[in-house]
Image 1: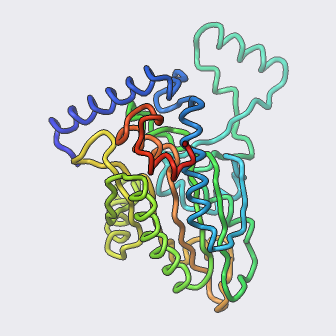
Image 2: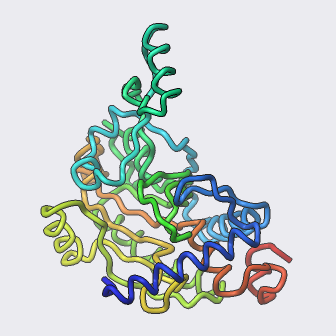
Length: 312
């Protein structure tokens, strides 16, 4: 963690880069910290990254699935996300009242009071990771001998209001998930760790692979962080965006052991609880890394980078 002086310098750098992106019309503020619209130029870069990831992952012949950024509350409750990351979750609440309660809600709105008390939890939760909606679809199944590889992409939500443009509350993850034996899951993670570094280096980004942990909540989270690091389950590919000393994770390569296999009764080809792993590319973060490294006008980027992204 940066010290107090470093934190102030980092916050200034984050706000400065955010202001430059907004001034250039690349990000469009929406009145909530960490929530943005994106320009056409920004989206063309994102699409170029998506196409590049698709080409690099074509050898897997993965199943392609696309889920909305919502999934069932009943499925969410089978996970332990609420125990580990309660500060990051997002719940969809709706109005179920009658006309009388509606009038009361409008009166509180007009008075400037908190009208949200009239809402109740609906059947959906915001998706916190692109792979979460996948596992319920495999619940109760036995995987084939070769396991399964699934290509996913969706917007995900994490409640982290910030002026750091790389810490958005709603952003896209492109993932390749492997479900199978422990050996199959580990091989998938490790191969994508190498492939991810090569992919980012081909975009002339100064990438490094680092052992990492998830931001588990509370005192118990300290133990879980230590365990995750000790078992080397998570690696991040980091690139300087707002700080050389504190680079930003733009890609994550994770082994989940049999965690999701147990939670959703998924059997591997060995009749044991399936092991899973994933690689997740943060599409907005990679775009921001490119804009910071090569400049805010993609027309001026190195030709080799433009060619890789189909921007020529």
